[in-house]
Amino acid sequence: MVDEIRILIKKEYNYLKDILNSSRTYLKTIFTDKELKDFLNDLVDNLDNKKIEKQDIVDIFSRIYKKHIKQKYQREENSKHEKKLHKFIKNNTGKVKILWGNCLDYLNRLPTESIHLMVTSPPYYNAREYSQWENLNKYLEDMRGIIKQCYRVLDNHRIFVFNVGDIFDNDNLATKSVWGKRRLPLGAYFIKIFEECGFTFVDDFMWDKGEVQSERHKNGDKPYPFYQYPANCYEHILIFHKHRLDKTRYPCPRCGSLKVSGNTQSEVGLQSWECKNNDCFERSKSNRGKRFSLKTNLVQNETLRENNKIPHDLIKKWRRDVIKFNPVFKIVKGKNVLGHTAPFPEDIPEMATEFFSYKGDIVLDPFAGSFTSAIVANKLGRTGLGMELRKDLFEKPIKKNIKKHKMNFEEYSI
Image 1 (cartoon, rainbow, N blue to C red):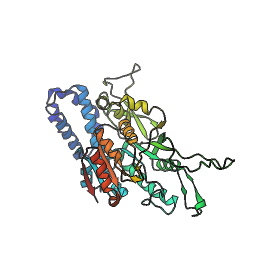
Image 2: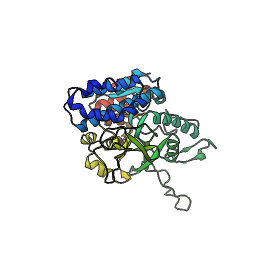
Image 3: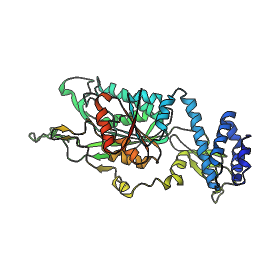
């Protein structure tokens, strides 16, 4: 650890010596010689010529350590990602980023755990002329392949917000007759798929869409038993967590030491740690060390909290798990004024972005549609990113929608 010298000769960095001494053995275990040198040099670059307190040193050490652990994991898990694409995505230009092409092709090209939040609504089974499948099983299998890649690409301990409603259609599994139409509980099917792909189902907001637009199932002329069924006037907003079990040690958020021991898993896939540094700034009355996880380090970071306070009105609006707001009305006097057949309300990505990401994060909608999710994310200080297959159908309305919000965009194609 020769490069320590560059750091420790500066008097104001004396506490870093304590961190490195208590963490030396594990650093040499987890990093190769080259990786350790790169890590220490990165520390120097982030500390050089700065007057900082002990807690600042802890925060910088932790941030740089997590960065290099993530890069190591990405190299080991996905060495063939498309570097040009990744550079395009992570370069925060303040513009909405449009990726033209198949979302699965793009997901396969992205580095592992490089996206901080996903929010989308999928193409519904046979609901549009451009989204047709032979039967329901083939639709769900296609969605499964995409969700599996979304799990890989989403950063650890992050969130996927997935809006989906039930539909009335023929699954085409038993019969193709018009009499084969029935209510298909897509929300239930998707929860099962998400969990089989590794996600944890957490919450279900029920979006009350208000007065229904269809007369289907009212059967007012048949006031008899077995004729009465409700019209579908709600959709699911499903919240999924990704918790990949990671037994890599992470620094104590109080003292920065890697002298920690595995404590327990507070939930499936979420490893907790306990600080074993007797000189830690925080010890319990029984002399137990700070208990933490990678997730608690993320959500309890005071620096991030300071600039990411959620507006009180938004919290109040989403306080209950049944929430009412209008869908986007696209048909005015018989004409589609938006140019897209499946517009997305801003309410959903606004909640998702404010509740589950920090400013500067990358927010991805793999089924971007009218690009509302990416637009809202950009408005809120994130990098808004969307993938759209049908450039031939939706290029003009998408760009028009972005410009309407007084934003610029940049494009990428494969």
